[in-house]
Image (cartoon, rainbow, N blue to C red):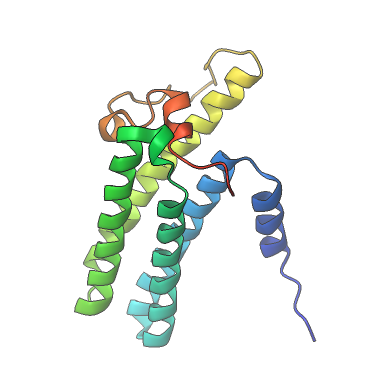
Length: 164
C-alpha cells in the first residue's frame, strides 16, 4: 500500500516547475523544519530521529552549497558558502555535544536568511510585473543585511545556480 502525501507532491511540483529563487526558499524551509524536528527529538529523547533530522538539515545545506555559482555570485557566493558551512558546523556540534543550544542559533540564522530570500523574491516579482517594490506592509530589503547579500537583486540571484 502506498501513501500519498499531498504536501510532498506540492513541494516536488514546486521544485521541478519553480524558478531557482523559489527552490532556494523551499530548501531553506526544509532546513528550518529539519532543525526544528531535531530540537523536538532532543526534547523527547529520540536519538534516531534527531540523527535523521540533523542529517537532513546538513544535506539540505550541502545542496545549497552545491548550487552556489561562484563565477556569477563573486563575494556574495563566497559569503553564503561561509555561512552555510558555519550553520552546518553548529548543527553538527549540537549532535556531537548532545545539546540543543547550537540548533537555536542555526534555526535563527536560517530564518533570518530565509526572510531575505523571500524579500528578494517579492522584489523580483514586483519588478517582473513592472511595479515598483511597494508591497503594503512590506519594507524593502535591508541593504546592510548580512553584508548586503540582498541589496541588489541580480547579484543575489546570480549567486545561485540555475541548475535546479
